[in-house]
Image (tube, rainbow over all chains, first blue to last red; front, side, top):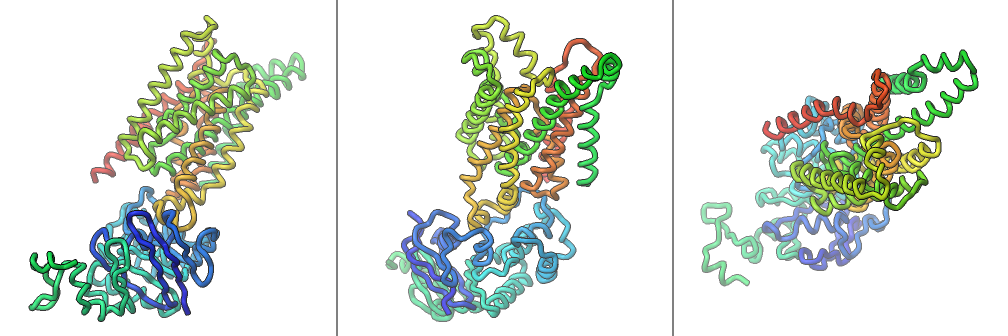
Length: 242
Length: 318
């Protein structure tokens, strides 16, 4: 069943007209060079900006949906972890819910191992700890679609893997997750990879095919290193690329 | 904590209403009708005005701080109060308005003008230094313009006359004046408080709020316009009173556990209490001359302001 449908969403100068369909239960990675448009695509889907086009989730159009409906349909986790006010972690997570639900909040505190930090003001946590609190907030209302912008940055290896497990559990329960990532080694944890560059989706394939594709290295300006992993592309090779 | 606050509010309001009790008892001994007249005709509008002005400063201070994501945004530091005073002076001494409601509209227009100027100068996503400097510049300019307007006013008594209320006074305000301040201020406060949830969500960042359908730019305009109406109407009747709008939201957020939008209601109550205490203090001073209420709030507010700046600096360098 198709859960997320985007009809020609676009943001002037940053995102060309893009169509996208994502099946329920899919875990989708967004990769691409810096400034390529990953964040713009997520923001356009979340209707953060007055992006043109139309976004439907389970057949329901996002524009004009009430706050409560939007919470049920999607949540957006921006890459910025800044918080100006000293709100306790527990209360930040509760802001992700449309009504009070202490049980859900304590489940999330357990899931993200935040019990010890529950009462600490979120602006006094380390960036990695704050990332966990904000991710818990994004997951709180169990929306149909999760739009997560670099949720794995600033996390230690344990939490990177744990986050991926949590995302997989969300997908298994039928949610869609679009996750912007930088670490190419993590691509294999996803069902589908979108390579975004120059404001458009350049490749849209299973992660293994994406990594093997010729254009993948060209766009990233890297190539497979003989010692395994990746290496920066030689200059001559880069110039010949389109 | 909330119950304690409510109790404090009731005590302060009751004290403000009946104190000083001496003249009241004397009047009652002579003629109970006179005592009733003092209570209902003089004390009641004064108490209501003090409560309403305090609430307007507390609520709009909290709303502006939530919107600018900065604990130093407030009606006085942003120049809104000075702008309102300028508006009221121009309306009263130049355009010759004597209708309280027209003066309140002039005050609101003045406050709106300075707030719009502040956003135009500093932007909305502004660091503390720029916000303070822009607010200070606007305050000084509005203050100077007020003095100029008074100096050049057609009435030669304008300066003397304005001194009585510019720094804040609740003496001998009529019911009509109280209504002119309180009706627009109450409506504005209610509309502000209805936006508390949106202002709480803005704390998660404008992008998250936008994904929930909250348009930050529109919300900012609404908060600015409503704050201008609430503060402007009160300033036009009772003068520019500082620091309450800065201090009340800080305490309000302690009660709302850091939530900047939900802090509006406790901040309004705390603002009322502070204003009641300040006006009680003014009346308790054994002088035959009135002391402006703004002097009292500034005397007690300045140390709190300094403390706020020091703790902010510490949290920035930590």
